[in-house]
Length: 377
Image (tube, rainbow, N blue to C red):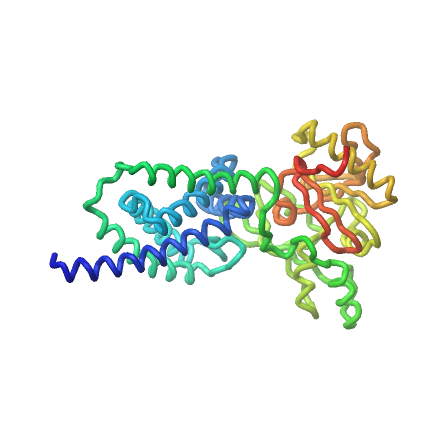
């Protein structure tokens, strides 16, 4: 190769490193700050491909996948062992290009999740994005193919360890506490009460008069099915996965946001009663009552005591099926009324197995992973 050709290849590869590096860092960051959302997407793919037995490892894979993507992007931007990184990037981009093509053609996936909830792309948009990046990765790999793969300079080894610590540490922190950035409608500051009032002020129908249609995907077949609120078959989390909630005859776009949150028990739907209540509402979210750690139960007892001292409402939300009106105690606390909520909706709102969502006049004031509840004794 002539010197002129080498210079051209160098310039092109430098531009490719910049574009691919920024793309990887952005995609990795917006997912690693929300490992729960990525884990939900991983579970969706596992259910579609009949690999539900791998679901317990979804969170580990989520943190590793997002952290690795962010780490590769940083290494490309800082020119650290590009030969090694280009091989990993080439393998991963080839795999995900094939996967997104399948998602756009034969596999029923509405959003591939490559940019988490920060930027939602259709499978075809993701596929074409990958078609743009893949040749750039090939150019990077081609230019650096003569380099040795595993020969690290001291500064490269230091930067590799630093990038690994940043990427994986960020994911672990957001898993044990809460996402640093919440891209979803249930973020802190969302005024659910005002959105409900806006429906009433514009002459919309009352919430209980709307027809709510729950759309779920069969985990085994991938087919979509519609349920009414009264049909409790959708509560079988092992069989059905929530996709969206539709409000028929809706008159305001905010109804879709409100309708995604629905709680009920044997006495009926309690969504409006909770969201429109004045003052503080403490919503304790529990995935499985038998799996609540003792340390978490002690913190929740403090929440119940605090709510009682403030004369505030405290309720318990759980995807665990409830046949009757149920009351639950947390470490010998006062009994708390429990309501059913869809598992995916709860994790979308809370981003934790167990935790607390605090409303103030219908506004989401705070959200806590159970281990992060530090305002009670």
